[in-house]
Image (cartoon, rainbow, N blue to C red; front, side, top):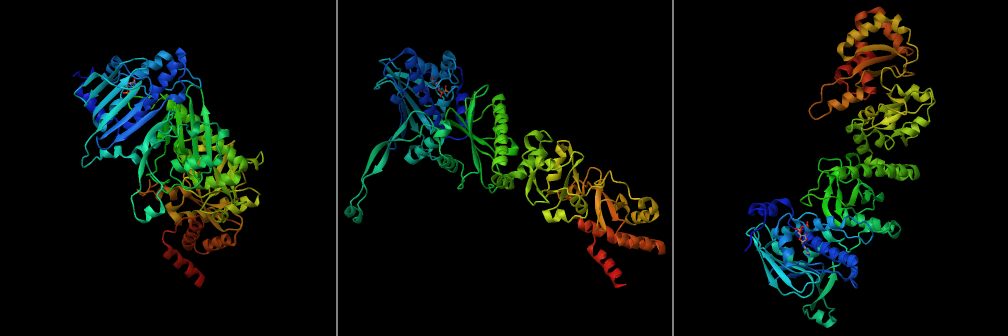
Length: 627
Ligand code: ADP
């Protein structure tokens, strides 16, 4: 017996046990090799002008023999000579496919050969399920067949053998079942069918297996309860042409939708699909879908984003997270690309290629979404209701990096129309001198509309955007402005900046100072407001932290950061209550404290903040009313 070259026993053991996390992928590896072998012979035929070799001559066969516990995978591809068996299977990490590819360059025509395997480890994954592997092979054009036999790390043997026709038969002697592993599963028809469908559906040669069928039974036999007579019939297990490799014009909407439902565990049609291909530095085809409903765990930590990744029709990984940005994590689908694979097909190099794909995909999704926004607004609104929150998170978590990507996709409800508007739409409605995009924080349009400061702005004909999600204000902070217009919270102290300061701020300085003193640290300032019309008081904030931000931050799990907004108590100088305040102050300076407390608490309420001690305040109000 010969021992394996270059690599020690331990390397093979390591590989068998650790490179692949799922044993079941051995079948994918073997089938990919078969497909490669067929490609190679087909290619040779083209090059050397061998007559009579067409694609349809090639076939891969799987045979399960439960009695003998063998699973055989055969192909009528190029086969291997004794030297090739020695060279290709005797050396771990020696990849014949790689050398072949290098020799022939990377021709890129329709009939080109696609060689999946690039690194010489795939074959050895057979040892994850088999304790002995025999490879019978006859090279195309040779008279002689050989068998390579190995029981794993100890080594291998190559002997002369009998074999009809060229090609390769790989016989796996399936391991005995243990408590943990039911290897005999791999001998079951249904399991083999599943694995082929799952991993190798798009291998371009037919993968055939004799499957059990049952004869029609006569009415009589059925009544007598006779067992059904079975027979075997060849069935092609793979569908061969991947949907995404077909021309768009050949695919119906129905087919696209069915494919989505079959492959991405949804029972509803998607909102839209994106079928695209790119040639260039990196070539790939992508078929992407946006679900019509929010997956139940979408806005939780358990949700895993990712696209299926295929290389030349073979599934490499079920969820490749690297090709889809977080802000579009709701997109499902697949990428088929000629990637350079690293040693295991399960772990793809996190390299430039994936980055390139991600950036292309990102642009494509954006432009498709913008198209939908423009051409089918109702649909876009529906999409936005589901996933708008994620776009806003994306804006926030990207610290402004996603500005160009996302600023035109996000929308907010308008207080005026009650409908979603884009920032562009809002800005289009502004005059040249208008500086601001006004927004108010509140759960609904009504809540924002009834903020004390909203009245004047709405009356001036301007619209106010409803910031109903916690992330909203943080997200637009990342934008800074949109087309030169600043975002302005209607509850900010300088919302009416530019208009002249109320004279009473100077005239009634002492009274206002007494109010401020009564409230102490609760507020940073008190002022006669220019932002109010009919309402008596309001709260606003000055500086970077808004009232809403304080609320959001203090509701965080760890009790927040303790960050507080600098609150300004705004009093309407035109309101009768203002006269009352002056009157009280003139009569008895100490009494102003109660009024200040009441006004401050009411201002908190109208601003959507809680009142710290509701009972104390209501006692004070009742006291006043009862007088
Ligand atoms: P890879 O396919 O990544 O190159 P493998 O370990 O799967 O590595 O296979 C090693 C080599 O053995 C292949 O490159 C190929 O040259 C050869 N080989 C494996 N299976 C077959 C087959 N069915 N027919 C012909 N050659 C094969």
